[in-house]
Amino acid sequence: PIYFGVYQQEYDTDFDKASSILSKNSQLISWDLDFSKDFPKDKCLAVLEQESIPFLQLQPWLWGDDEAIQYTNILDGEWDEYLTQFARDAEVFEYPIFISFAPNYNLEDKPWSLMKNNKDAASFQRAFRYIVTLFRQEGAQNIIWVWQPHVLNYPDHEWNDMWKSYPGDDVVDWVGMT
Image (tube, rainbow, N blue to C red):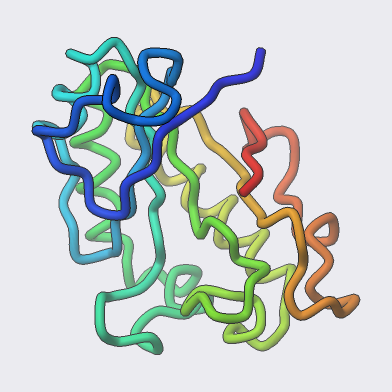
């Protein structure tokens, strides 16, 4: 199946998907979360009330500090406490939730881009796999994991080829393209 969604950078619980260009045809409502945000239970419930599925764009950075988080920090366990609590809160929520870790990582302007992570596609793969594994170990089986590169690699170099950073079928449930 193909799902269409509505994206808001910061989701407002007063948002009515009927006011969007896709109107009631959008199955997903998506918004951004950096690593300073707790699991947004109330916002997810507001999405469910509109008969849509929450789609969280989990961005590995801290607002205003582009260098605070690298994939190596995640792999070294420096964010385990945050990620574990997020996973536990998501698991208790019980309803399906789409989560995209580091969306559009192949655009150089993102703080979590490959460009800003030593041009290392393998570190993105390992970080993606690490987070999915951590969530699953915490029982968060309601998460639908989305691999979401941008359709164009920018910059267009071999190290930034989206296909070289695909994390694997065992940790990717859906593919989303921007």
